[in-house]
Length: 298
Ligand SMILES: [Zn+2]
Image (cartoon, rainbow, N blue to C red; front, side, top):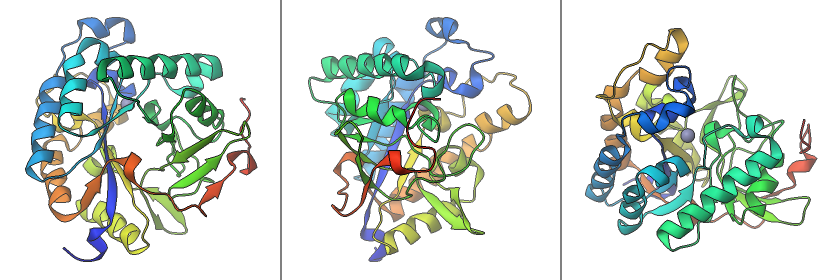
């Protein structure tokens, strides 16, 4: 292992079914979810076996919908020694829920996961990285729900999410309420004077692995852990196919067959751990209300 590869990066899985992904909602709207096939248990088991094989640990952000229907998934994750974190209850984006709805959604999910696991749930990730410019008020809600860290911010420009003004490395947030939160933004890489996503998920499917690995190595050289994510359905090429049309078909299905191989190579070549165990230097601090655009609800 090279010295650069010895730095521990954050590895995370957003535990949801394929039908929970926003791209799927036109064909599998929330009122049909209880009738949709469940595949998350089998894929998560395979994922846990793959991590055990490579002696690596990770954070699992479990959606409340999954915990309700498949509580065994939560037990398997905890039993295998990984970090359990919350992905909210409904998988609706923070901006769609609004401040009150979002607060209720994440409080429910945290209580549910704590009841199931018998342990405190420290970490949170919003559906579709939906805490960004215009929804930074979500950070207050995450802290108010009792979480001590968050990984919902993608510090890039994107059509659905993103906060290009946000730091791209882990930071202590000093919130206007006086509450504190550690934020672990998703991995990006610099090119052409901007930062681009490199964190896994769709990017691991769409980009050559070398670009993701290049971003991890660069972060390691800067002694800055990167945060990578995947969904179980991205490791499930056998999932039922729906006609989504154009860009959404591409975003959901492209590259599924290659993801397990790519993840295996990442596990072989880089050191990963749970996000909540990554230390954040004391001097890395931010009051997000001081960013351009502030923190107020639109
Ligand atoms: Zn999700």
